[in-house]
Length: 112
Length: 115
Image 1: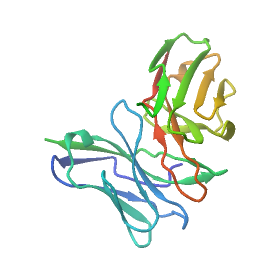
Image 2: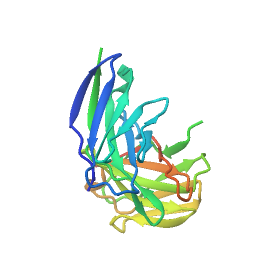
Image 3: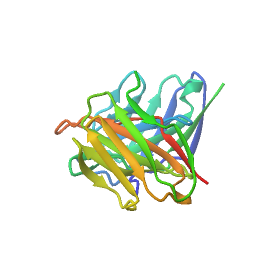
């Protein structure tokens, strides 16, 4: 079972920031938070990941609360192409290989 | 310049047949995976291989047999196909770096439909 909870769906206006929340209250100290997204009919795409500190890359920013029980993915200027299902995942280790446990995700719709 | 490529993209076949899906990655990664996404859109891991060795096998029926001829390829063979096998199958790969989390890169999926 996924160790995260996310809203089922969200809407955002094109050009605005999209803030996608995720709760992971049972996260362990050495578990990372990963974000992936799946645009319709495509494979999941890696966005960003973090452990404790806030992270930023060319796609998004990740804000993790100090207690690490929740995080927010920020798309600073959402475009229509950002419409997708966004998955917040806590990385589970198994035998040294990375196992991703996907939940239901948040369906983000960016409106013109 | 596709990083993780799967073939075929679409596969329509009769119940009871045997079929294979191929996956190749040109990223130099050590670990490859198969995931299944069912009609309700849940993505679940099936297998992972690290340098041709099976690492994860998630309670998948024996009819599914992954084969890794080398670390750049992970094929999925399915015997005696059943209606419930209809799904999208995604291949993924990641680099194995001790102590460092590495993201997985996914292919675009193989849409399997059983008639």
